[in-house]
Image (tube, rainbow, N blue to C red; front, side, top):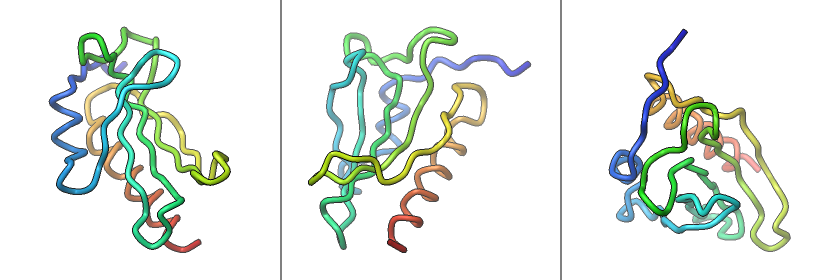
Length: 111
């Protein structure tokens, strides 16, 4: 069985960089760190990454408490546009996360 990985805010920040137009904010049920980016061609469509990182310490939740999630919403209606399976925090999570975001991004470009 794969081993759980503790993820830090610095690791997520290395993936979702402000210079690539990613925005970081603190919100959600657990006050987790959330990253998002709007499509240039359709600014009302936003890709969101719920990181599972806690605002108070910048470290991921405990084992089995939360997973990384990627989705897309229409900011005008606040309705979901795309939903994906969760990304478990086990070795290789970075590659799976990047692939999932790319897949959502490419799907949205075709809308």
